[in-house]
Amino acid sequence: MVTQRSGVFIVAGCLALASLSACAGEERPERRLKPLTVREQASSIAKSADGYVVNWAAVLGNQNPWHFGEQVVATIVASDDRGAEVVRMEQPLDAVPPAGTLAFSGQAIAAQRPVKVHLTYRPAQWKPAGRITSAFRAFPVTDVFQRRQKNGSYLVTGRVGNPYRLAASSLVVTALLRDRAGKLLGGASTFVDDVRSDGKPRFILTVDKPPAGVARAEVVARTWGTTSRPYEELAAGGAVPMHTSRPTTPPFEKDRGRQEMPGTAGRP
Image (cartoon, rainbow, N blue to C red; front, side, top):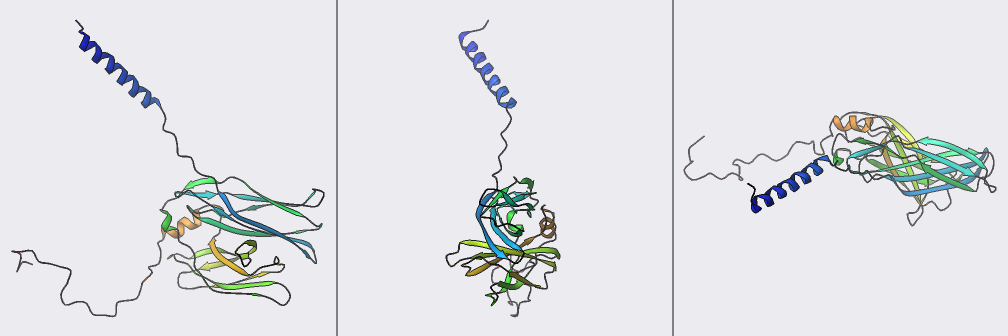
């Protein structure tokens, strides 16, 4: 015999089971990764002996703290005053580290005078990072010297270091050219090979046709490669300790941070 109270319990139980079944059948929504953002972008056109120099530079940002952005390709199109393409090229970009940025630059020669430069980007392929964000350290750039030459070119030199125990087979050094207000105008890049933790090889960058108004260069270094593998391998090898010198003061005769508990005197 089913009483009124027991019937209420049965109905409530059925509703609870149905709710649990529905919840079990639902798939948890995956967290969507944010696309790369273009933080800065600039291009310039200058006349040269071979035609017209098309220069560009940009800074991409990765807002995802646990993923590398891989296999990114920039497409650069320069067109003339009639809209006809005079330059079209694809530039594979290096992997963008988690919660990091990627600064890059490029240059091409056009036979006809372009009036407009347009950059587009192929969406990144996302690769989960094997380590936390802080494991992917920046490559220090020191002793930077920059000067506009008498022939109009812009010279940038300096040294690049390696914070990791393993040697970096190849690093890309990029100089971002900026005006007095900090606005990005253009850039140039070069490679430095076999960068070890105990050495700081020198790099030399020369921009033959720099944009007008360049006041300074911001120099950054990164691993070379469209995938995260070079950066991951360096991080897996460990970072060099920041402080490696031995202490110069003698140790304390007695550890002042230790306090004996009552009744433990004389114990080892």
